[in-house]
Length: 78
Image (cartoon, rainbow, N blue to C red; front, top):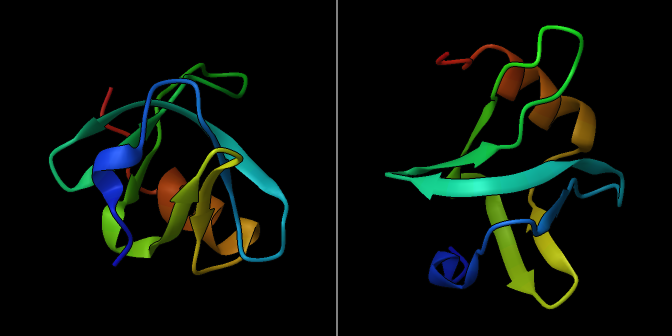
């Protein structure tokens, strides 16, 4: 697992395919809370165990953006 302590607010989150998944709102427990998006303006969450790496360019996931969105869409907590 990557050093998730480096994840900060407003970092972009990318799938393994290079496509952007969202923007970090904050880390909550074992999840990244993404900023509100979509027509319903709800938060989505991504499990930290999906993080492949973190650098100045953002958070890189170990799955595609589509897979991350599918997982995140099922985890709204608002």
